[in-house]
Image 1 (cartoon, rainbow, N blue to C red):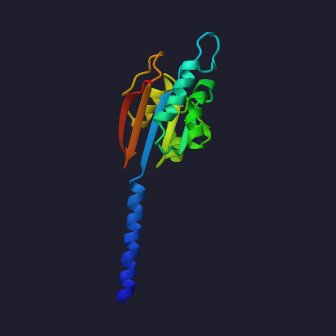
Image 2 (cartoon, one colour):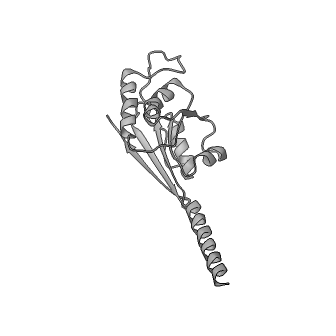
Image 3 (cartoon, rainbow, N blue to C red):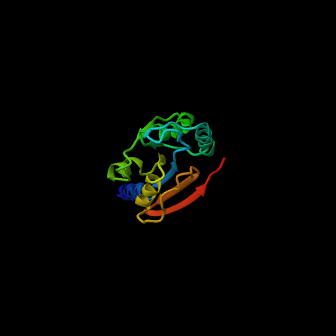
Length: 169
């Protein structure tokens, strides 16, 4: 009888530990705006990166060298894909695409909970995405000539922290 009672206590303890592990999921989001885009044609809605932008995109992969990303997201535009590519290649990950009109919805939350995620967006969608994740209007749109913002959001047991860094190269 003691044996069964002891076994029952072990099973309850294991169940409790697994429950605690699920509760302490850590989700980390790194959000950046695309690098410098070609502005020679005002009518071009899908420009490529400039030489400077290509260098910045490569620099982001150096900045993220020691970050163990699980998923890399980008909008489906040349400038965002080209910004995400060097990091995706260095991590051997395929870029996943998201709709910038559907920021941080239930499907996205489900796919990214407990993961480390890079999101490459735009001057308006990136801060909106951050605000949606943290549940407050903390960050304004990024100035059109600013390509150096790095937002880092960590969610631990539903507690959210957000910081903004400027990464120049």
